[in-house]
Image 1: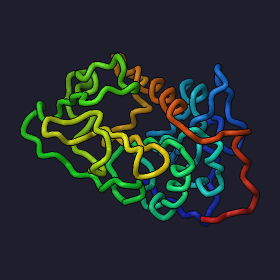
Image 2: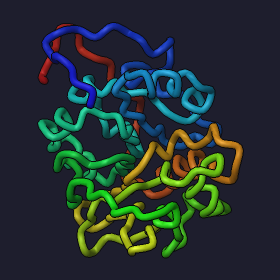
Image 3: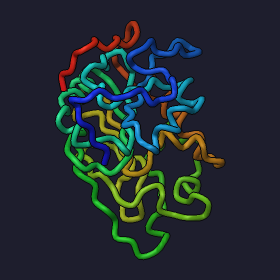
Image 4: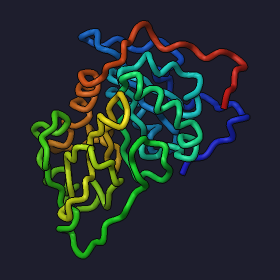
Length: 247
C-alpha cells in the first residue's frame, strides 16, 4: 500500500499530464470533467501518460486531495493502488463530495472503511478456474457490449478480474457476480446523496489497453459518470495555494 509523509513536498512525476491544479481539459461535448485520484506509483504512472487520460480524465495527486475542489468534477475515479489509510483519515472529504451528488468509482480490495456503506474485502474460496467466472446479473451501461468471458479471462487465464468481493450494503444493486453470488461490481445510490460504483478487482479505468470487448469499459465508465452525476459543476479546478498544507 502506498504511503506518504504529508509534511514533505512531492515532486511532479506525472509526465506533464493535466492535473486538478490546472484547468480541466475541455471535452468534445462540453461535458463535466472526471478526476482520477492517482497515488503516483509504478502502476498508475504509465497509465497517467496515456492519450486516454489526456482526453478523458484530470489527474489528481492523491495527497493533494484536501487542496482540490472536488465540486468541480462530475465524478472521481479512485485507483486500486490508492493509499487507503490516507483515504480513511480524510473519508469526510469523500463523503462530502458524494453528498453533493458526485459519483465515486473505486476498484480494488477495500482495506479500510473509507467508502460509505462498504465492508472490507472478503476473498473467495477457490477450487478451480470456474470459481472466477463473472456473470452479469443487472445490465449496466458500463458493460454494454462487453463479453463476460473477456472480463473473466485475460489471455486465457482467469482470476484477474475478481478474487472476492467488498460486501456492499443490503440496498446496493449488484451488477456483476461470482458463481457464489458474491457481488464483485455494485452500485449504491442510497447510502449517500451521490452514487458509488465499486469493483473488487483491478482498475476498470485501465481496461482500455486490452484487445477484447473489455476495452469498451473505460470510455463507457467515464460517459456513465457524467450522465449519473448530480454535481452542479462550474468553472475549473482551483489551483493549489502555495504553502498551504491541511493534511
